[in-house]
Image 1 (tube, rainbow, N blue to C red):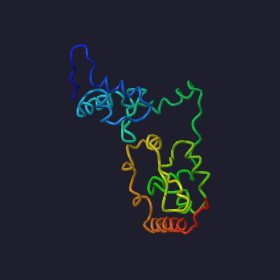
Image 2 (cartoon, one colour):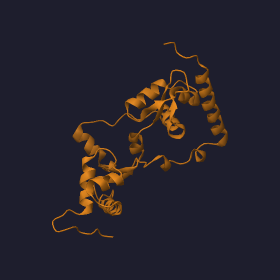
Image 3 (cartoon, rainbow, N blue to C red):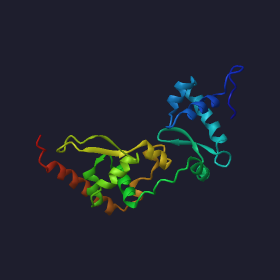
Image 4 (cartoon, rainbow, N blue to C red):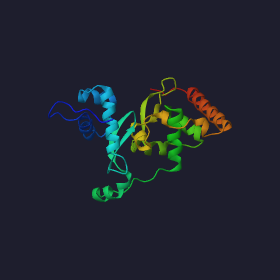
Length: 206
C-alpha cells in the first residue's frame, strides 16, 4: 500500500521516519517515532513497511532492522568489507565458546550474579564476564540484596540484542527446545546451589 502524500511541500511520512532513524545510533521504538514525527502510530507502521521495502538487502547498502524493541538503520552486512576498509577497522575478535555460554546463562536465566554464572558453568567465569562487560554485551542491572555483599546482577544488553538481530528475548528459541530435560534439571540444581552458597557466606565486615 502506497503512503499518502501530506500537504503540498510537506515530507512524506516515510521521509520523516527515515530522518529520525538516520540520526539515532540506537533502536527507536514506534512510540518514540510517533512522538518525534507527529504521526499516528499506525502511519508510522506504514512508513516503516515502506522503508523496509526500500532498504531490502538486495536493493540497498542499508538495512532497516527490527531489533531490541525498536527500529534501526544499519549497513548491509554484505558491504562490511568496504566499510571496514574505509574506517580502517578490523573485525572484532570472535567470541569464545565460554563467552557464548555466559551470554546464554544471562539470556535464559538472568539477571543473575557472577557466582551463579560460575555455578551453572562449573568453572570460574569472572574473566569472561569482564570481557563481555567491556564489549557492552553484559551489563550490571542491580544487586542481589538477599546475598552477603549484595553482588551485582548481570543481564544481556540492548547491544547484545542488536548484534543478535533480535527484537527481544522472545525471538530466541525456548531453552527446552535446545537442551535435554536432564541437563536443564542439572542447571536448575546448580543455580539453586549457587544461591544457597551465597546466602550461607558470612557478611562482609565493614
